[in-house]
Image 1 (tube, rainbow over the protein chains, first blue to last red):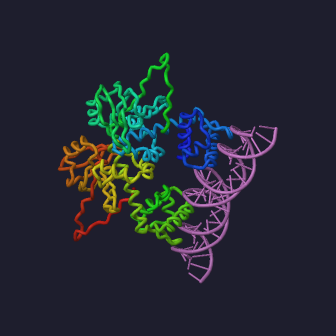
Image 2 (image 1 turned 45 degrees about the vertical axis):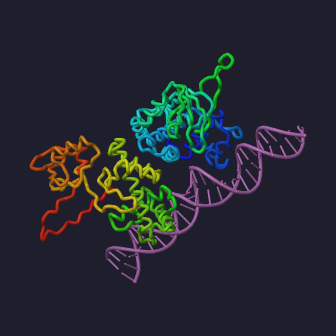
Length: 236
Length: 236
DNA sequence: TGACAAATTTAGCGGCGGCTAAATTTATTC
DNA sequence: GAATAAATTTAGCCGCCGCTAAATTTGTCA
């Protein structure tokens, strides 16, 4: 498996994301995401097609081949492992974690990847709640949003509480914010203000940081015949 | 201070090393060190000269300007901090630490550098015994060899014992291999075999790993009038 | 001093990955 | 179905950083 350039890796990752969100990737969407001009994207797509990493037919959008998808998942694994590692081991602030990982991911060897994964205990989710692909290219299809990015007025089931900080973990536990609990987002103050939540009939004002560590899934509201709602998430 | 390309950073680092060893850097030596052709080196030197990072006069070799030296030291700081971090925090095998750092150093931000330095307790030497420049561009001029790379039959003063592994540290202490002790290298078995050393009239067979953590300085032999010997080290 | 070898530089090319401007295809609308 | 708008591709350029081949400079030795 040939070594790809950093630019190629960026394109594969971007195509993967667009495919997830919209089924396929257009030249324009790709260009916007990567902050290049459409002409540049076309250029690269032809290169990736020659390498059999994407299926590309002119004017018609692009899709990853199985080989391309495998590569994309490897890169995403690098990225998300790095994010988590930077956050946990080096206490990089959450908002900077992404851009740091963005540069480091291309320089990460397989060995170092393994060591980092092991140091983290082979985690399956990154600090943003996104699933980390396994080494052999499998990825959980669910992306869990955290309490800070979820619409207010709805009920959510807590599926995961990020375990980076034991103190925070204990704090959240005291409030009753534990996996399987049902939480209602009452209100959200703007500009990084607290998030009002209700758990077990108690109301709490949660800070931004705390909210970022609580990952949830919407509780299925019982509609006619209990039909499941389709959801779509976007971003990352 | 403009951001340099990875190639430029590699050149600055190489020029610095050659200057240390030989006072100045020739096109050929540079090309050999960087594994490029001399013509390519000439090309880059002209670019660096335009940026006022080196003083370059054709056919006459090259020298870092103060600005160039500052940049070089920054890069070397990145490199050596990474080496130490990879070794201590992630247990990357010593022989792989260099090439990993070589790729990561160009992607390291200032913030991450600071966090890594702090996590390591602002260390001053890397795992090879090379000094780590400070953030403001000062560097200790002494490079201490370790016991595994030192000629046999001589006496050495232990100046530093690397503190990465507490177990190892205790072991070495038991043997009497502590800073300020004088050690004689009796014999060295080939092919990664043990190194026989004498400390306090006791003889020990030291493994490769242990030997790599003991950094020494030759004991000044008393020659006529106690004149100091000049030494030169090479490598890294 | 002059001739030659070695080191260095110059000239020109190639792949990468951006860009702009112009041409082309696709989609939409009357 | 023709006209037009929007998306996409093509053509050609540029900077980076390698390369080779040819020209030039430097240093040495008779």
